[in-house]
Structure formats: C-alpha cells, structure tokens
Image 1 (tube, helix red, strand yellow):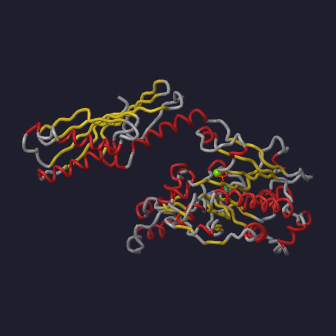
Image 2 (cartoon, rainbow, N blue to C red; image 1 turned 135 degrees about the vertical axis):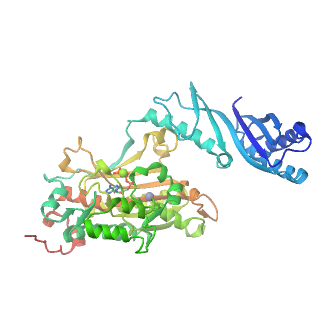
Image 3 (cartoon, protein in one colour; image 1 turned 90 degrees about the horizontal axis):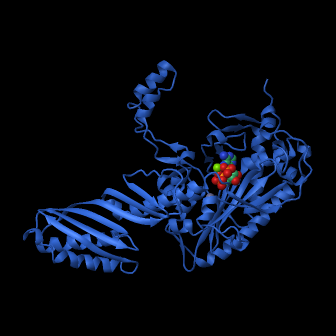
Length: 504
Ligand code: ATP
Ligand code: ZN
Ligand code: MG
C-alpha cells in the first residue's frame, strides 16, 4: 500500500453498545469522506478499525493521493454523529503512524536529516517515509506533503552542490581604455573619504564619498525612475517574520539576517541593576542585558520588496491602472556577509533603491525592456562604464524546471545581473566582475503569496535592486577619485565636490 495513516481517537466516554457499537457507522462515514476528498485524484479505503473501551483506532490507506484529507473529513463527521446521537465527544486525536511513498531524483549522496522523528528508506527512485506519533495539527497544516517536498529538495540540492549558478552573457558594452587604478576602497581610505565603521561590515562615508553616493542616488531617480513613472514610497525598516515566511526568505537566508530584539520593559527600575553595573564596571554587562531583552522579534531590512508586497497584501489593483510602479529608497539593507565582506563592495549595511513593479506578464516584459534601456543609458553615457548583463539562475532551480534558461524564448521569469569590470582585480577574462545591480521578474510567486489581485487576468511582479555602494565602487574602480578623469555628464551631476577634509 502506498500511503497509510493510523490514528487513535480518545472519546469522552465508551459508546453504549460495546466494542461493536460503531461497526455500522464507521465504514459509512469513511466512504463518504473518501468520496468527498480523494476520489477524484486517487483511491482510498478504511483498512481497519477497532474500539477498545473509549479508544477508537482507525487505519486509512490510499493510492495516488495522501489519505489525511479523508481522515480529517471522517473525523469531522464522526464528531458530529457521536455528539448528536450519543452525546459523546472526541477528546484527543493522535496519529500513531503516517507512512508515505513518493518519487525522488535518485539516491542521496549524503544522509538526509529531518527535524522531526522519522524513518526514511530510499530504493532506487522511490522513497518510503514513516512519521510516528504526529499531532492532529500536523495533518491540518499538511506537514506530510511539506516534509516530502523537503526530502525531494534536499536530494536535488545535494546533486547540484558545488556546481556554479547558471550564467549566460546577454549584453556587453564595448571595452573601454582602463588606466591602472587601485582598489577604490583603499584609495578612499587613504584620502579619508571613508572609515571602516564601529561595527562589523559597516562604513562611515565622509562628505566626499557621501556626496558621490547621493549623486548615484540622484542619477538613478532622475534618469531611470522618474522617466518611467515610478513613485516613491517610504517603508518601515524592520521586516516581520510573517512577511519573510511568506516570501521564503526565512527558510532561504536565516544566516544572513540581522535580528532585532526588544527590551522586555522600558521601566528604569527593571534596568537598575544593568545601569548600576555599567556605572561601576564601564563595560557592557552582557548576561544582564541578555536577561532584559527578548529573543528576536523581527529582522532589520534585508531587501525592500518583501515589505512592499506586505503593503499591497489583500488589495485588488484596478486593471486599467496597471502596471503599478513604485520604489523604496529609504530602508537601508542589512546583511550578515561574514567572510565575504570586502571594502565597500560587500558590506553589512548598504543603501539600495528597490523599484517594484506589478502588472500583467506582457506589461512586465515591456517594462523590463524599458528599464534595460534606461539603465544602459546611465551606464553607457553618464557613468561611461565597461559593463555587461547576464541571465542568472541558481542551478538547482533550473533543474527543477522553475525557470527556463536554455531557450532564449523562455527567458521570461528570472534574474538579469549587471556586472562591472574592476581593473584592480586583474584582466577582463580572468577576474571576477562585480554585480552592481539586478533586475527580476518573479511571475506570480509573491502576488499569490500576498493575495494581491487585479480585476481580471494574471498578475505578476518583479523588482530591481540598485546597489548604490556597488554603483559607486564600480565607477571609482574604473574612473578613479580625480574628478578631472570623470565623464562630463557625470561631472554635471556631481557639481561642486565638498572641500577635502583634513585630519591632523
Ligand atoms: P551578491 O550575489 O553579490 O551577494 P545578491 O544576489 O545577494 O548579491 P540581491 O539580494 O539580489 O544581491 O541584491 C541586489 C543588489 O543589492 C545587488 O545587485 C547589489 O547591488 C546590492 N548588494 C547585495 N548585497 C550587497 C552587499 N553585501 N554590499 C553592497 N551591496 C550589496
Ligand atoms: Zn526584491
Ligand atoms: Mg548576497
């Protein structure tokens, strides 16, 4: 048998009539429940049942479809019937055993771990999973199908581990003569334009660097967002766990967040021991602090689009007014980059403008072309960069068929990375170029997750991450810090540079 669910129901009292009291009722209710829930997708049956005093054991089997929907429908009807006819309730439900079979893409290369009790055997491309002793909630919330999906995903990931993300060149600017220039972060450090920040991976930008970062911001707004009709929003800086659960970020990137904790109390009396210790020791009383703050309650902004989708959640957008084009330029992104940090190129806190667009698939494809044109205008004629674009997709996602990549015709959903050549890293061919922004169309993934609708037709969305520190480092790596070497259109945007600060 493909799937089997064994449950134990404790009743509020033994049914009058003894062990055979329910022999007529149970098969009838099971048949009705199976017909209502499973019949269209597979077959199922009540394989066995038995009543001992006030404990009822039932076993459902099924093929082609999992049996728990039928069991839940059966349980609902049984509760009704027992209550009405015998004044007996179902006090508790335990799932003693849930056994399922399903297909996987080959044998795993390493053991598959799961955070709940289980046994898992894999024979060829067929997996046998048994979960003992589940709460009723596990059926209502469909843990079983999610656990199956997790096993399949883990096996798929293992087989693509270490393989590079898919990368295919789309466009390339002509090469530009590059003077030998230093790492821009080193150059800015030596001129006191920036200072490595007081906490991990953060930078303090002095007036010259800040002026250039703001110049990049102005160029993005004036040359890209305004002409295309994007309107600005101002969003909160903390992302709720609920939002990140919906977008998938919470399961995808838990090790890259900065978590936010709250004081358990703002009453000075609660903090008295803490403040007294600070006064005496002049150190952070870490244990005392840990006692006084909560565990994480949210995360500091990682990307802006999740909270923008939250803003639109449950809304219906007028079809005639699509596409919706908005951007946030106020929430600062925080990411725990750990070993990957490097200068201003990979920092733990960065400034990003994130345009988000919601519309029909056709509208978003058109908008992507318009965005690509405006971006190209900025990088070719204002910043005069040597840059390229590439179609990128995580390897395992491609294989899962989530995104078509081989065939250009199918390149509808997915991400385009923009990369700049950094001369200080070596030759064009051998060195790693810097991803300085990207542009995605994600289909209905988020409009579905956040129930964002329109009056008629499909509603898709996408976003683009304009990383201002990356624009700045890409530019300075190619053009250097001396304004006389900068392209004239950029110089017009810069205007007067702030006076150089001197420290003695
Ligand atoms: P990477 O592959 O470089 O880590 P990512 O795929 O994590 O980038 P996204 O989440 O797609 O980046 O964010 C979009 C943009 O945000 C990037 O193109 C880049 O401009 C900027 N960005 C991302 N991480 C950082 C960082 N640590 N420091 C500075 N800018 C960043
Ligand atoms: Zn986004
Ligand atoms: Mg990253």
